[in-house]
Amino acid sequence: MNLFNNTKVAFSLKTDSQLERAYFLFKMIQSEPMVKIGSAVTNFALKVHLPVEGLIRSTVFDHFCGGVTEEDCLPIIDNMYNNGNVCSVLDYSVEGKEQEVSFDGALEKILKIIDFCEEKDAIPFAVFKPTGFGRFALYQKISEKKLLTLEEEKEWERVVARYHKVCKTAQEKNIPLLIDAEESWMQDAADNLIENLMETYNKEKAIVFNTLQMYRHDRLAYLKQVHQKAQEKKYHIGFKVVRGAYMEKERARAEEKGYPSPICKDKNATDINFNKAIEFIIEHKNMALFAGTHNEESSYLLMDLAKKHNIKKDDKRLWFGQLFGMSDHISYNLANEKYNVAKYLPFGPVRDVMPYLIRRAEENTSVAGQTSRELNLLKAEKKRRKL
Image (cartoon, rainbow, N blue to C red; front, side):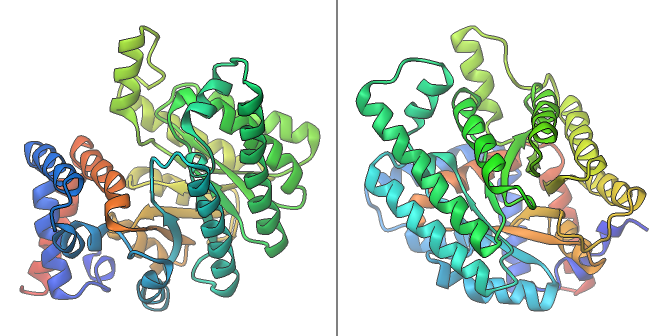
C-alpha cells in the first residue's frame, strides 16, 4: 500500500468547498499559458491599483497563504496541529524590499515570530531570507569579492548585527532558525556569514540552519566541506535541504553572462543530488535535517534512512517540510505515522506576497507530474466523498 495514496488522511482538514477550490486552482495551474497570462494580468492590476485584492485573497492567496498577519494565521496553525498533528513554520514572504527601514521591520517581525514559537509547540521553527535583512546587491558584491566602499562596509555591519540579534535570541529561547537560500550569485556572502553563526550558536545543538538548494551541482561538495569544518571546530550543523526555487532565472543568467550554469543538467541529477545530501546528513551524528520535499521517493528514502540509523520518528533532529497548500498527501500521512512534519505557512500583505505566489504557480507548472498528481488525489477524494 502506498502510504501517500490515503486521501482520507491527506484531506481530512479540508471542507468540501476547500476541496473544490483546490481542484479548481490546480486545474488552472496545470496550464502554462494560463499561469503566464494570469501572472502578467495580476502584476499589472496590482501596479495600477485595480481592486483585485479581494479576488486574489479568496482564491490563490487563501489556498497558499495563512493570512495577512501572524494573528490571521493562528486558526490555521491550531487546526493543522490539533487535528492533523502537523506543525507550521511562519514565513513572512515579503520580497524585494531594499530600504533599511524594511530590513529593521523584518528583524522585528522575526523576533516577534520567535516569541510566538516559544509560546506555541505548533510553531517549532522561525525562518527568514537573507535579503530580508540586507540588500541583494550588497550580498552580490561581497560574493564577487569586490571591494566595498566605507558606506557599504557600515551597511554590511548592520546586516551582520541583525543576524546576530536573531540568532542570539533564538539560542536563548531554544528555537531553531531556518535561513533560506537565494540566487547563487549572492549566496556565498550569506553562506560564509551563516557558517560563522553556526560556529557561534550551535555549540550544544543545531539552532542555526542554512539551506542547500540541491539543483546546484556544487552543493554536495559544499555540504561535506562544512561538515569537515564543524568536526574540527566542534559545533553542530543544521541544514534545510530543498531542490531549489530559481532554476529558470539561474540558467538564463548563466547563458546571458556566459558562465557555466550552476544548475544540474536535468531533474534526475537533482534528485540524485538531493538524496545523497539527506543520506550524508542522516549518517552523521552532529547534524540536524529539515527536508523540504514534495517528492514521494525522497520521503520514502528518508523514512528508510531514519530506520536504518535508529533515528526515532519524533527525534527533533529530523523534520519533513512541505509548503502550505501543496502535497497534503505527504504531510498528513507522514504526521499520521508520527513523524515530525511542518508546513511552511507564508503570510504578509496580499500585494507584497504576490511575487512569492507567482513563483509557486510557475514552479508547479514547470515540475512535470506534480500538478497532475495533486489533481488525481483531489479527484480521488472528491469521489470518496461523492462530491
